[in-house]
Amino acid sequence: METNEIMKTYLRALVISLEKKEQVLTNLISITKKQKIALESQPPSVEQFKSEVSKKEELIKEIKELDVQFESLYQKVIGYVRNEISEFTMEIQKMQKMIPIVVELGVTLRGLEQHNKMKLELISATKGHEAVNMKKSSKSVADYYRAIHSLKDNKSCLDQKK
Image 1 (cartoon, rainbow, N blue to C red):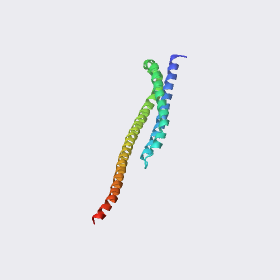
Image 2 (cartoon, one colour):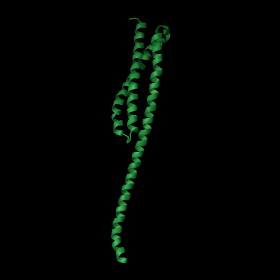
Image 3 (cartoon, rainbow, N blue to C red):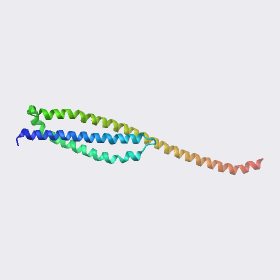
Image 4 (cartoon, helix red, strand yellow):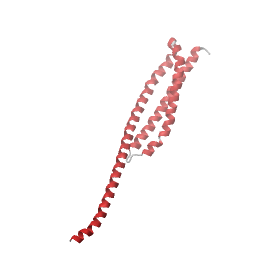
């Protein structure tokens, strides 16, 4: 097989890698949107949010593998392709069209993740305040009952003063 054909095969593999990455990012965005809905529901469903995490972990691993494979293959072909660029215009144009799409999906995903992170922190802080407030309420109730109980004891003293 001649070198140009091998390079074309490598470039097609790079395009396929970008297509797979686009699919995985689209799936990640879909899951992240589900998590956003779970966090924005009333009351927030943190359990539903967490159930989507394992799905995302697998997709993130897949993206990392695709990135490593892409980079490795890219390093193999870049030197040769630069010298013979006119031979590979079709493959290069496909990649040039796909790269901005993949980057835009990555930016969208990052924005959704940031939103979910802030929402989750807010929920965690609220839950923390609720726990503190619950402790304070419990303490107040306990103090109230102690006061009532001591009033009952003191009531007999008050009755005796009359």
